[in-house]
Image 1 (cartoon, helix red, strand yellow):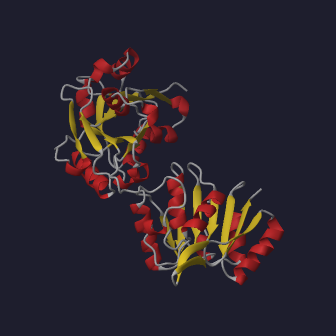
Image 2 (cartoon, one colour; image 1 turned 135 degrees about the horizontal axis):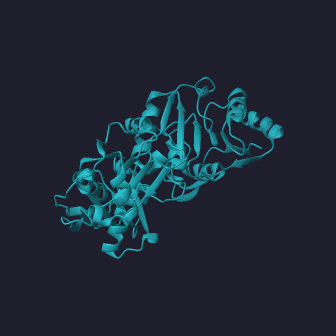
Image 3 (tube, helix red, strand yellow; image 1 turned 90 degrees about the vertical axis):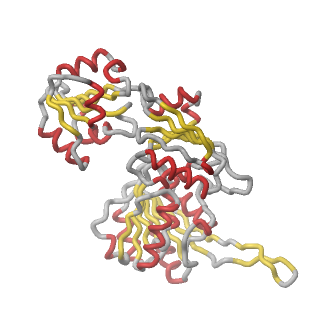
Length: 399
């Protein structure tokens, strides 16, 4: 099949910044799809112009209706870097498509600042929660952020200040590569600029001396979560996440998720990791939703109900954690639903649940471990060990 759908990245320099092949493609197009700004950048053309439809799925449907015509989609910068290209590529066959990348906003910003891109986290909060950047806010880290509008820059400045990163240096770069290009410099703690909507924000993260940023590794402090005391505590959670082994794009079922501490850390640990939390109590589901938002703006899917009934019809997972409501029936349903080479981890504190794990260990193999932690605590005018309730942990990989 000859490619009929061309996705062309364009910058503020318009046609002058495009390759000869991209300019020829635009000149020969039957239809050109883009935003008003995109259309203004290419000047006059013979093609029929189509403005971005909303919602985005309407664009995909419109493109399918135009299959076989000579169609151009205009996007800003590199269409395959936080842009429309990924969704289009997932919808159409590869031989139907041709991509014409332009210099991305990240590259333009990095060249202005003299930043090495391999040492910089490039993220998008365009149409995404600002909290998505929180796991990346670490002392000394550099960030380049695609924002939704000028107000987002001020909102990010406020968020950084609340996190103890008020001294962070902010540089908002607007209309990069065009005649109206402008740079706005300042600190998060006293940011006062009015920034144009089309901007890229550079952040040099600088923490106040008394700020302790949340680690990027698993095992966040219990105090980082909103909880009612019933949760997988920090030490056990760190071991649990190590056994679950988060990886990019993987899906976790957190059965009996409580405040969502395991599910949230799973999503923090790997790019595009997803989680479904099953929890019968309304108040704990509410806490889990708050924790998912506060600790990374994650879209934690929460299911009201108890296992095994609440598990039916869910997407097959890459890993499962059973932290509450363990029974033979729940285990068997979870193990059957797990993808091949998926990981199942169960924590038990009661003798009845421990007996279930012993039986499953004998049936499936894997690892059965007793976890025991103790915290130093005052005993009168002395210090002694205060043991936590022991946890029996079973982990297995489905072969």
